[in-house]
Length: 411
Image 1 (cartoon, helix red, strand yellow):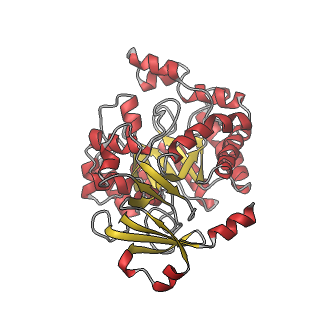
Image 2: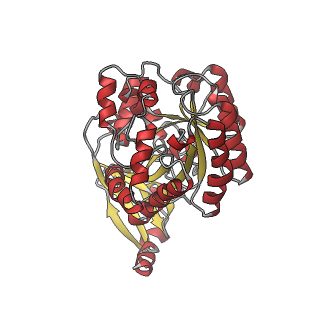
Image 3: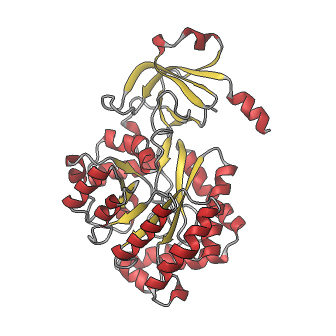
């Protein structure tokens, strides 16, 4: 089967009679090409541009697919998810509807710790079975690359189980999966309140073992009063960098602990949430090239009234990505289309920011800017074909999926 797929993928294919939103860096706006074409060979884009300028040698030996005027964008990228989890936290949703805060739920033994108990009780197979429908929902909306975090195991065996499940899901579906180790997510019950000792286990036991097994693409942490201090996260980041792993950070979500600036000091791929980030933090991110990942689903779900400082990010030219933050407690969402609409309506991000946020800038947030996120020669032939009249419809509509075809690695 693998050989057959390789042979099929080696063929040249051209999608003709299309309108392109290339999202290419340096292009004006969305990089629109009217009457455009995309060609792939060997899973890579070999042409993306005006149909009239297609090289003749490509045309003569290619399979052609006519798009009948449909729009083609890069495949969507969900750059922040906790997709692998067991069970749900609907009861906590009810608590919040009765007025309990996110912090109150966590301190009462709910929150992340309840998901830890559920994940530990599940087998690797159970996790895959429960999580694949969430992955399939995202794929059905044109998603071709996803980041999946651990962080509900909080010991070596269960963090390993979570990361292995994420990898196996990438083998079961035609999608690119990036795995992020989030051991510094919360304190497990057996730690008995000793955060320092637990962080030592993350640094000296979990991180080197899982990195040595090739299960980690990046390392994340939760820097917050109910989670870990800037000093503790700093130690995790030092250990990650010593292993050659890039870092990311849940930063400034519930308070301003200057997580954005901390992330920038370690040249983090991204800082995520950022509701309480100040101007110094935004400026530091811009200087470091750290992407701001905007997560409107979490703000909506926990009824957060403080929005991320979008105007500051614009002022300092901080790249902004948009993601679902799919997780069982604060953003049980499996729709990048809905995430874009929320980013626009809740935070007043414009159409261009939303669309580049789930393509080009999301790729940047994963360290994959040279591989995916735009329709450019040399990149993976990952794209989505849409039944829409204009790209703004992908942000504007609610509960409507206009995907016509999803292409991953040219197939």
